Amino acid sequence: MILLIFPNQLFQKHPGLKLKPERIVLLEDSLFFGDSHHPINFHIQKLWLHRATMKRYQSELEASGFSVTYVDYEHQSNFLRRQVKRVSNSAETEFTTVEPADFLLKKRLIRVCEELGAELTFLKNPMFLCDDSENQQYRVGKKRWFMGDYYKWQRRRLDLLMEDDKPLGGKWSFDEDNRKKVPKKLLGSIPPLLELKRDKCDTDAARYVLKTFPNHLGNLDTLYYPTSRKDAKKWLDHFTRRRLDFFGDYEDAIVEGESWLWHSILTPMLNIGLLTPEQILKSILKYADQNDVPLNSLEGFIRQIIGWREFMRATYNDLGVSMRTTNHWQHHRKMPQSFYDGTTGIAPVDDVIKRLLATGYCHHIERLMVLGGFMFLCEIDPDEIYRWFMELFIDSYDWVMVPNVYAMSQNADGGNITTKPYFSGSSYVKKMSNYGKGDWCDIWDALYWRWISNHVDELGKNPRWAMMCAMARKMDPERMQKHQTLAAKYMENLT
Image (cartoon, rainbow, N blue to C red; front, top):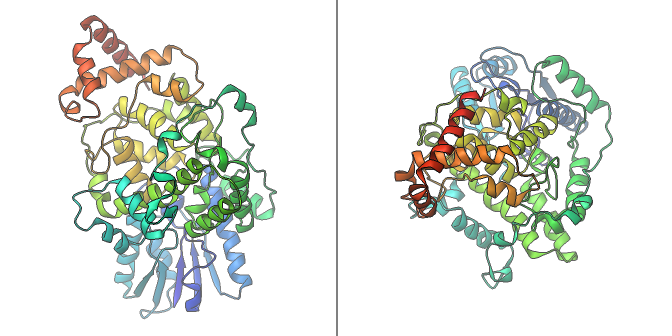
């Protein structure tokens, strides 16, 4: 049996290892590095992370006595088919792999093995707490997906933060306590990112990707993320000791020039198997048991791991195809180059983009309400937005970006997993951040009222938008015209 391992399956306790494979094949698959059929210009930090972590995994496996074949990325069509055919011993070859989280990789792998007449076995993916059959147990008898209900089901199923089948603290979610703006007195107390010592594996990987991918987005001026299990564990411990206490209060806050705040920044490692959800939960709960962690911080973090992350994967498996093939609001604008350069003229948007180019990371509110919300108001095509998010983010993969982009930030699916479209005026951004008032506010608000006015009849059917639609209908015509004129001028000049 040959065990195939892809760039996001680097598990320490890989379920295929105990099957004693004759050979392990580590594949720099094109879907993770650059695909001719689905071209995505990945951030150079992400390419470096994949290369460094895969080479470490190769060494780790070989040190444990496994025979490993490492397949370097090549820019060619049908990369997976060529490589699987090359490593197969005969028509009777048996391949085993962890079930891919992404549709296209799974589809390609099945097709290739069918063409070669090879047997293919999928193993349960340790990257998630729930497999598809478990998620469907929740789905039975329900008309649609609701994150709140799913999260409660997870809490009960996993018996997390529960007392006598009731939520600890008397509430399922402390989200209302997690919306504070960072006060000025705390700005100097934001914990610095953990600095990691770099070794030859890291620097070799950096040289490799800079040579192999010279024209990719971002830079490697600083190597930010852990590439070893030891450093990933240090990173997790640093979060629990230095950031967790304030995570809840400032989970939704935005600070100009600051990417990390009190966030964990665990997804780069979690989404490739360097850490697992079980490992993170065990560590966080052990720390909370021994220390006085604010409940809104503990619950808020647990909700991200067992709630939102698992919910995204579950809805991707159930509704992902319809999500990505629906454009409910008929937005068709191409992605302007200014969204790649950070030159849109909108201060919060440009600040986040420039930080993204350096790090490949920003937190969830910046993704949803700053980037996604503003792109929504600019009526950019959801397919273009999906590609942009896949390119710019260190933790982007199809399974997480399809529901987050098409359903959450763009409402392109018409609201199958959300209760409203998520966009705002400039007031929300100012409320949650320290960006100063400027011309960007007028432009943002002009686009906001233009969009509402243009969709007032349909949007008004949503109870959560009824009041704003009523305000748009009653707005002084001259004021509305000023909004329309400013919005049209901005859209015309947006390139």
